[in-house]
Image (cartoon, rainbow, N blue to C red):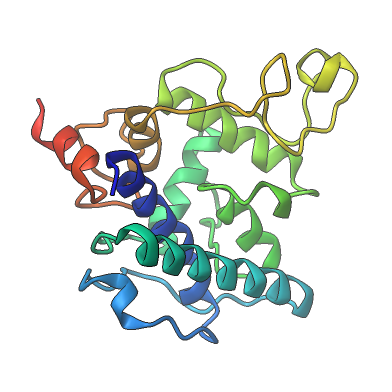
Length: 219
């Protein structure tokens, strides 16, 4: 297994946990967690039938991705993941610049659940939530400290494809190539600490894999 592959698997776990534990119809083979700890705070989301079916598809796809990775190159233990509504709510507080009242609850309904998925994005699920996605993208850019590598689904024409589009399903650069992020940049974002050496956010003990663990060792 490559170092980058192990890092990516930690991100896949974060997506997968939010989906399958919010919709307890899935059966994931226990061997895929590699003995990692159960997540903190996930609960069944109150989803309408359409959203439920969309999330079901994404969940099954993520399980398939993880199984394929494990079959081809092996996997790593699932890291501890904090998916409490309070923890996710803090990210949305940061996105809006103040504490939301009532507190944001990702499990309340479909309208709340979909932008919560955007934290580690399923971009195609967010077609009606331009303000949320723009604010979360701004937070990710600020935490990542590497300029604009993320955009919401509605942008000025000068940032759209060929400077001709305000819709922005895939965040991309001047040549419409998807932005890339280095592991340290991703760590700063998902830890919500803007520091790859300090765990937090949905990874209270940090991500797993050699790259992530070496970041945590370095001062």
